[in-house]
Length: 386
Image: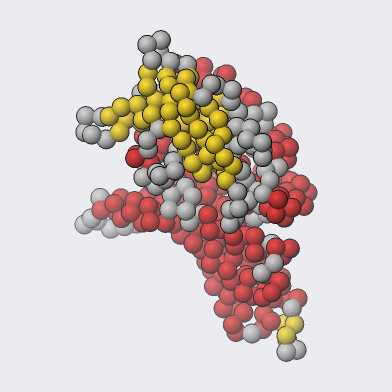
């Protein structure tokens, strides 16, 4: 029922606007808010706070369907529903959840998460943004965050309604940075949008921004959890982020496979449908096998994942590592099968090909996944991998 509902919404509302908003590099805010009416913006949040209380499989399903039409719009959804709402739902206090979550579940407000910085992406623990506790218990945040999806919601530099910000609050005994999380709301002094990032290769229907925190003072109640606890928050939330990014790849792959399959039947060359030629059969056949492997891995990982616990890094990294590159390969095959038609925006696969590249970078680069997987497998040395 959930898949049918989302698929119908995609067909009726998202698909007709996808090409236009990609070309214009605009975030369709009003359409985004409609997702709240369907219960999707608080998909995994507790029903107690206005959410739908669903699981990782449901999150995968929604991201797959949205991304089959408009990955840019889907990325804005992921930043709000997974990086902000799910994160706050799992890690926030009862007071924070009661005060904030309902407005974000309904779509009245839009949220995001800020971790990456101009010089620190994959090396998240190297971040330079700091938060210093003041005498009255409030905190002063200074620094810049970069590549923040939903950081601004329009072209006028209007910030998201609330940003979940990671900042250094000290150093641990082992010399590693102490990272804490803060809720920074629009209108707080010292919080602003530095710039909207334009001319991106893909996912152009979501807004990407630089956020500036210049002597930004937030109340003591803005701290999520305990001081220095956020490395755990970060790692736990990265797992569902990477799984849903893999689900985006799955949606891209499915759409590209369908488009090339249909085109190969309709297109005639040298008196035959082009699907009768061996070269085209290779593109379609290998893409189908790759897509089915993606689908199996994505839903298997989702079935095992608990949103309230960490410990799924091996497969959340593995599924994103495999699926992001597979989606790009399938999109590339679709363009090749469709020739000149595949190379222009009107025929969808060109846009999906551009969008797919981000998934090899955002939410963790391919190289970071390779490192994490190898490190995690080192603990299995001498035993069978099952």
